[in-house]
Image 1 (cartoon, helix red, strand yellow):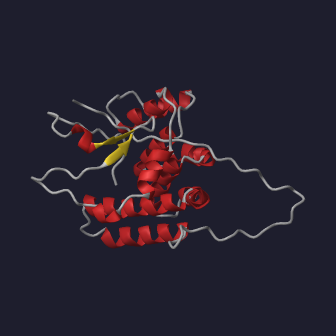
Image 2 (image 1 turned 30 degrees about the vertical axis):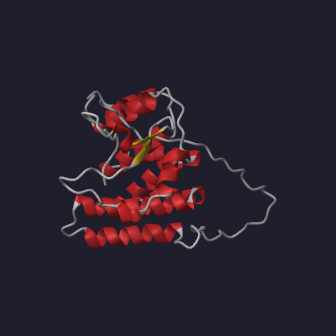
Image 3 (image 1 turned 90 degrees about the vertical axis):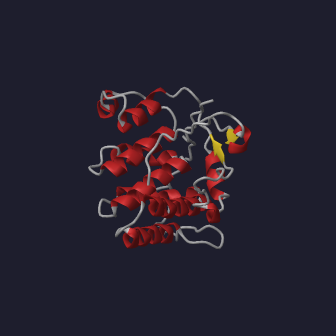
Length: 233
């Protein structure tokens, strides 16, 4: 019995600009999760660990570093968005760091990130562009434009076509909180707990409408097919 689970989420957070009469206020330090690191520190540590793992790094090791970064960012929540936007806009920042910033912005689903994500889908680095496309899809349905159709291309099997067409045609109402909560609550000690030849560890996933599914619901079925639409670390 096949199931396709797509983790696309969206929400909108808007802030009022300061009055022109207000005196300038120096930027405050970015908040950190309780007892944790600030957004800048999380990104710096991610960058450092990626650099250390570049020689002989495996996809699994890089995925673990990315997962740890996303969990910590979701624990900070919306206050992390301004730093992530700055990072994605910084063309001097390492591509992997800018890509994880785009991914996190999609998971946070902060509407203020939409303009920079639109710019990033044309980034010369394909990895950044791919994560920006997925992030835009998580913000909800996009208004179709000739430019977006051009960027999607005409090959229905390509990643950019799938990612942009999902965003252009989705007809559901995104629910961002389940995947954010799953990341906030995730036990990082469970990473890499699956073993060949043994039953898969139980896990829970949220679909695009916010409904949660657990692997144990399908124990005993002939087949469970998991399809993740997105980019790998």
